[in-house]
Image 1 (cartoon, helix red, strand yellow):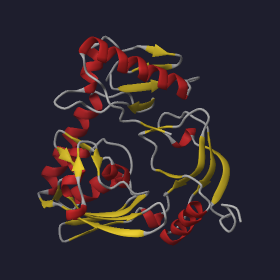
Image 2: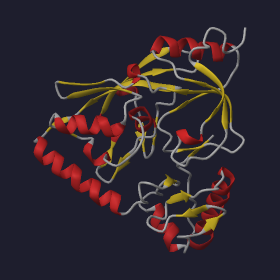
Image 3: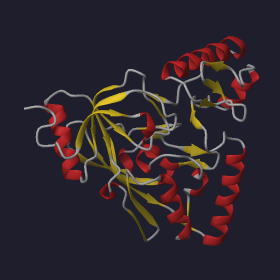
Image 4: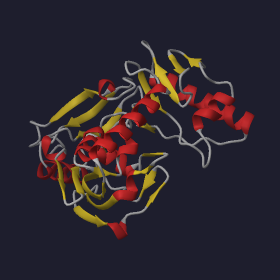
Length: 292
């Protein structure tokens, strides 16, 4: 038996991944799957476990760099409706891990529920945001989470309650293969005031970021009490280039990939930035971008 036997309808071989990420770089996945249901995903995960095939889950690709040589094993996308359901009831948001974070935020604001609106402008899926505890100065997503349903790397489905959940800066205890769904207890507020706050935060955030048509990614975590972008700027690195990749002139913690760029260009530029900031400012930058 091979890893694809019985899964021919949902698994493709040698699938290009570049266009599925924001940087639009990198090679192919040995296997690429788009399961339509949780049961189908669980069966595929169990097969990969049995066959010792490594498996990864790709969300919206906003925080991932695919290496030029590609990704061995299975890459799974949870783009189906079963993974993106959003429901709101009694001050709670119930959302699938594959739901877009932006959609979840807009639905809660429309329902007059406060808590997630400071995250406006952060790309990606709800599952990815919760796994990495996405946040801004207004708070993190983890502070509102009260429950999560996850799937392990063996295909087992488990429920994590609030007492099981631990959140820290840009990390969480939700480290299983995938977050299938999560619940958030939010606070009632006036929808009109919430909308105004959200719009204001969106304008401020977008004013200091690269342009929306560019292929970009945020690279480093903010060191405690400091801004990674400000440190990179202070080290004189805005506009620094390697090949067709440069440190953004608008926000130094973003890299911009122009036509002809490679993932290797990105990795080399990251090394330069990390070493210069350490050398000139004495701060070790930790990578936020996931490198596959």
